[in-house]
Length: 240
Image (cartoon, rainbow, N blue to C red; front, side, top):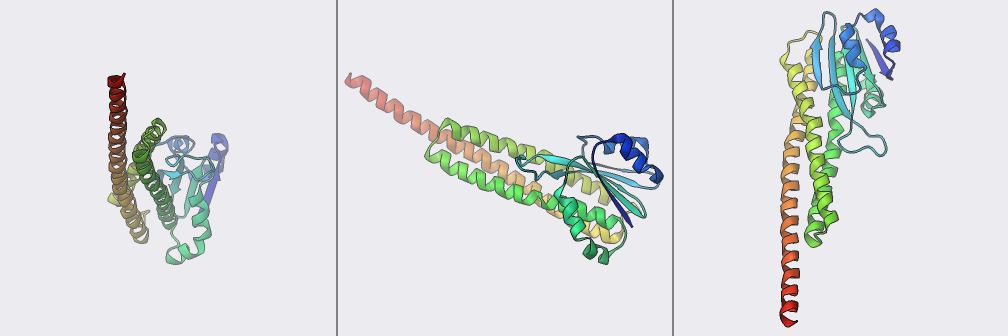
């Protein structure tokens, strides 16, 4: 089993590097794309999988993702990404333990997909905590800045859906296909990853309801504050 990890965006260099593996020109083109929707394609001697991983670089936004493209063959797996991805290093560190279960390269693909999904969890938890804090703060002090922060959090929830749902659909597609390059052991891990990303997308629906409820509470607190101001002005005008 050979795992070739390619970090970069030089299309010509990449094509020369993997020329002996006989990849289709369209796959080579997709591998170099900066933005590519998650998908899976089956070719004569390999499977091409594109997924998006959470970006953990300093200053990155919670919904920022990096494209990860995978070529799976009978004896090899090639991973391609334009920027460093935490999941690559994480799976590489655990490789001896992973290969004890299976030496087929599809087990590496399954572990990469699973690790990519694991990194969604802390992002969702952090977003949930922030929404709850903003909800309490905006109700106690319904300022314009508080409303803007709530709207920004709600937008992040929507963008998080755009990142997570395609990954869930991708895993469904992989598991529905009876591809011989995906072993039984690998399918077990992929099903577990599917359960996890399904839980995350369901959690995202809860976050959407929380953010909507927080905005409703903010608007109610703002209306109450405005009513109090109007009452004061009415009394002042009457006395005047």
